[in-house]
Amino acid sequence: MKASLIGVLKEHLQSRLHFHDSAMTSFLLWTFCFSLFLLISLSNQLEDNKIPSLCSGQPGIPGAPGAHGSPGQPGRDGRDGRDAMPAEKGEKGLRGEPGVPGERGYSGDRGMPGEKGERGPPGECAVAPKSAFSAKLMDNRSTPLVVVDSAVPFGTVLLNEQGDYSPETGRFTCRVPGVYYFAVHATVYRASLQFDLVKNGHVVASYFQFYGNWPKPASLSGGSLLHLVPGDQVWVQIALGEYSGFYSSTKTDSTFSGFLVYSDWKNSAVFA
Image 1 (cartoon, one colour):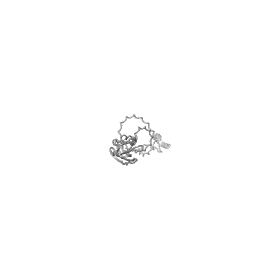
Image 2 (cartoon, rainbow, N blue to C red):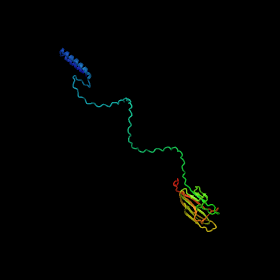
Image 3 (cartoon, helix red, strand yellow):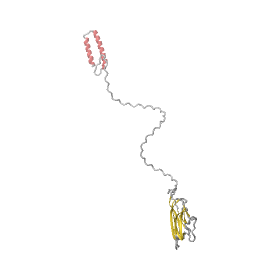
Image 4 (cartoon, rainbow, N blue to C red):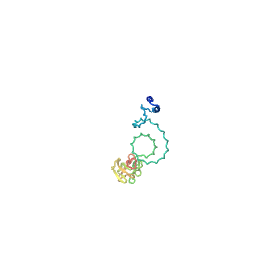
């Protein structure tokens, strides 16, 4: 494009040089040099096949904004900042409100059995209270019956482990409260017999056997249940003096027995 412009200007000057004088030739030559210089200085400004104008025009209208470019690559991470100076410890805050109780958790596994503890001290033995006795008359074939303070003494003890019966007085003294059974088995001989079962001086039962001069002894038995408290006494007494036919020998006996049926002792570990 530059070569064609230069050729056009050269032909134009040559045509001008043939028809004018020397002054005009000098002017034209100066013009040709100036135009050539201007053309060379502006040749670098050619863009998009456009020839710049030798005269400056008005600025054009600003073009429409271009489309946004695509995002650039992420930048590198910055350097770590320096550690700050430790701050002073703040004041303790107020206690918060209790939270809502959570749901009950599952039961855990059974733990291992613990070690066996030391043996404890021996406790009191829970034994049911006992009371029982049995005694018989001593041989009175050759001697009359002896009465001690209105009580018949059955002097030969058969059983009296608790010691509640006294063979010297013929009386049973209650130690354990409860219900007792008392029984009298008498051999009747030489005379009729009437005896009473007595509690604390009061007759609770009376028994009688008539003797009609029989060649052999007869028998008389009786018994009763009594409720006793500690200190009560029970014994056998002759109801009438002439009816005292208690008899005892090596072949036959007269006995007085009694035993505890059940206890109502409040302090008993078994019968509380």
